[in-house]
Image 1: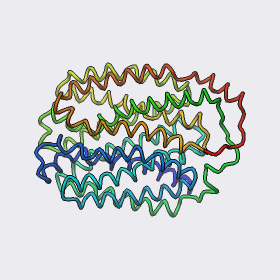
Image 2 (image 1 turned 90 degrees about the horizontal axis):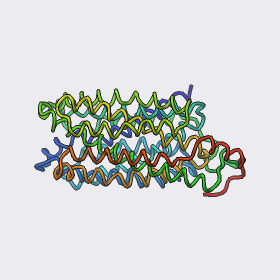
Image 3 (image 1 turned 90 degrees about the vertical axis):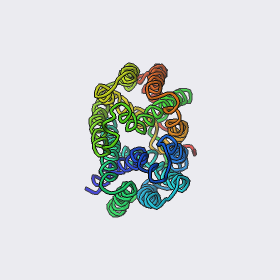
Image 4 (image 1 turned 45 degrees about the horizontal axis):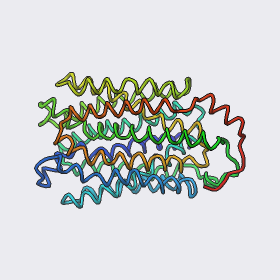
Length: 401
């Protein structure tokens, strides 16, 4: 029972992580007005440091998770996220906001390289476990849209940060009580359960990291830009933040279901085949969205977000299947540091790019990125060959990393 509650809290933590990172994107217009900044596009670059630290912070977070302990790091996550959102609510200008958002980004970097490996350590069906976890994260995105919209309309933008911050602190207190203690840090295991030839491992890591970069670019641009995209092509939403938040929540809630389907497919079929199917459809749907207006654009948004969210489980599934638990947090941290660090520049460029070229051109660029993902996926080694190689190289004593 304690592990079930712990697993639930780990999934809730994923929702909190994505919720807090997306509150700013939903509230950016209200914050710009409060700070006396004329256009939301001019305020958007101030959140770049948050996403940059969200990426590069994964590297030390993953190392600490393996060598110090994942339970302890999750406590730092819960309480750190809560404290940093309170600080955001106290800011009075754009530079103070940038600093506080950066602090939140540093704490938010803990979850993915620590929480997901902790959740997967005893998972019998990693695909569906990742699917459920991914759905929880995306429901956090949906909650960010609807919660922020309503709090802005009926309170103010500061409340949109305080409320989830209090929830994070409460979850941290419960996690402290119920999460079972770790019997030694994962990185101090004496024997590895999975060992691959160096060439195969390097190829898998290269493909995984490249796909993480392209997927993060698409994910960050859409989740941070969808609100303003809807307002640009459905002008009725400009003065109705609650309705806008509700529509975005519907998009993200429907899209999150795709992760459950992908999780089941991953457990039944080779990962490479499932990935090719998802990436093959992303480009055409972005092309459709680029030339759509009104409710047609909204329908296209539902479809492209289903494909964007559906691609999220892939890299974690590769880590779960082909990377030993003793080094999973560090491998995840290295992958996330590269992908999120680079894709954070998308958040910085979002406002200026839309201001200069418009959403139509930006969606076409996302379609091109999706095509790159499809081409890279072809280079992923065949799963049967990887399994055969693993059998030829049985587990051995752990080397220090």
